[in-house]
Amino acid sequence: MEVKVAISARHIHLTREDVDILFGKGYELHKRNDLSQIGQYASEELVTIKTDKSELKLRVLGPLRNYTQAEISKTDAFKMGLNPPVRDSGDVKNSEKVTIIGPNGTIENKECCILAIRHIHMSIEDSIKYCLKNGDKVSVKVDTIKGGIMENVHIKVDKDFTLEMHIDTDDGNAFLLKDGDILEVIK
Amino acid sequence: MEVKVAISARHIHLTREDVDILFGKGYELHKRNDLSQIGQYASEELVTIKTDKSELKLRVLGPLRNYTQAEISKTDAFKMGLNPPVRDSGDVKNSEKVTIIGPNGTIENKECCILAIRHIHMSIEDSIKYCLKNGDKVSVKVDTIKGGIMENVHIKVDKDFTLEMHIDTDDGNAFLLKDGDILEVIK
Image 1 (cartoon, rainbow over the protein chains, first blue to last red):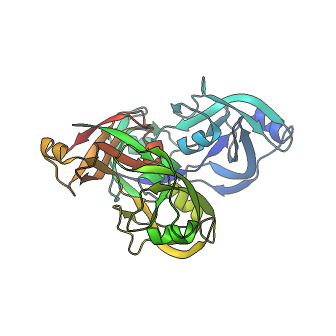
Image 2: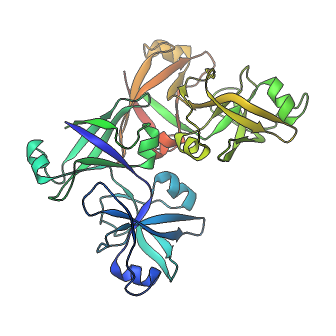
């Protein structure tokens, strides 16, 4: 089984409530470009996340979600003085706290900052085809000069998902991968 | 077989000739601290490497060598607009060119910038003990939540070497490793 890789730069997902604070009541995000997962998009909007040590600009991804979640790399985390847990999307309880600054307002010490676990999105059809179910863990082989095997890659199944592996920029840079590279999944 | 890991931050090795240009004729480096490999040390001295796109400060490691070599990460390389080859130490032919700036002078477009290949230093005694020779390639297993296997790890044998695996900050951050972690070598 093969999968196309997409490298996720640092970004943030926001709730309606937090957009209201950061950008103003009822504010609507402006789509900059579609992402490969159906309905997901990068917006024109940026926010700043801040700690005592440093700050980073993060692009807001749409649409809005029912949780606010900042996804950064371990490289970013060192710069920020943070130690975020490695998590599946949406699992932000006891994650790192950062202050989020938007053009209209600030949210202090928001528990929202994680390192996203390596994962593969797939449709229900692909799930059946490849005999994998939501929550399964697989390994993925990389054949670059700094190659190897990425373990503990989580399978995420949804009717709207497109087959694609998401890794952070640290994995992308360590393994010398670029968007669109094709990798082999080892069950 | 187990090996202790050391994460190499970006740094530079310099020749006598290049120290003369950058710091002044006959200038001697000032040792800040010893490194784990016998005789190697981090100096007090820093230089700047510069491209059209950006610049980075690099610590000078001593003692002097018969080649000048800047070792950065792929993360650094993106920031700098460079695409350095992955190389063993000393193999700088056709590597990326950067301008090196010191307090006394500048070296323009020096062909010296690489990504260091993952490698394991070992003594002749360890080489015999583990049935590995200089130039062999092994794989190394990592058991973190973002673990896996690093392949194409080069074995470097010398009478003065101490058993230790050297990786760059991208590998360290991607695999969530820290200095001193113990990893399993798979031949």
